[in-house]
Length: 199
Image 1 (cartoon, one colour):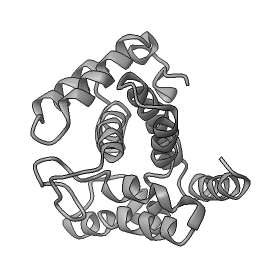
Image 2 (cartoon, rainbow, N blue to C red):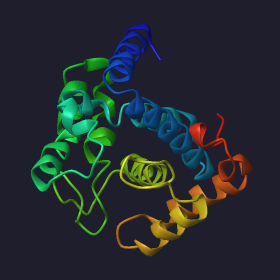
Image 3 (tube, helix red, strand yellow):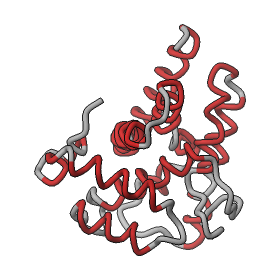
């Protein structure tokens, strides 16, 4: 990572942390999981680092979402959800404007796309591999951490849900995530904050 890239990433993560701490913590967890899944898939170091960085910034567009929507304690209305679904586009716009980080744009822009075309913002079926990894890890982390309107699922339950959505998620990546979890037993315990995963 060059100096300019390091400074920009640090600035963006600080901005996210200051705007909505829960999203910042989620991003850290997703990045750790994504790196480990990429490692389990035997990607090379350059690819693993790029996926890790993209995962760190996958929700950076949420700094553009009104805080009353982002931090709402109840389920979002349909209109509010439409606003929330803009965050990948906002995130991509932020990275495109920052040349040293622009190579991470596709991971940020497509992490909510699904293989069956039901995702957003574009309903794509062909999705970059890095974005597929982040999609699986993002969904897993969302399911295994408490939200204001629902309790967290266990890691086993979350993996089962990902299995049942086999048309949406790359099942090779779900298997890789399951193997990461099995080799990091703390994920089943109390250390949910970090997902028990170290890099």
